[in-house]
Length: 138
Image (tube, rainbow, N blue to C red):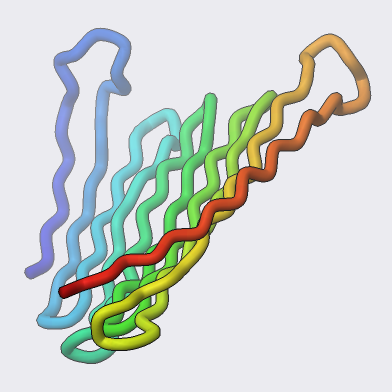
């Protein structure tokens, strides 16, 4: 499937025109959008094997940017996400791995920061919450 759309937005505060393109095959999907303000967003998925896939989502706007990448497999999954605004941001990642057919273990890390607008040098309180998890199937 291949599609290209051009449309006008009737919602106040939204860009007048938005452009969106779609591309799809049996094992791939790509969707990308943009507007007159050069904001961009999209989604991509690639099936690596019948049971493994990589998925990516993004949004780039004037105020903030967001990127997310996920891997989904039969015995493991992982993700990375990042959000960045001019004065704050978040980065995170996780991983889950099957240890046995009934037990999966993994971890998660998030890094958040915020800097003050009035200081010339960034003031960065750093938070590093670490989590671990285990999933038991019966």
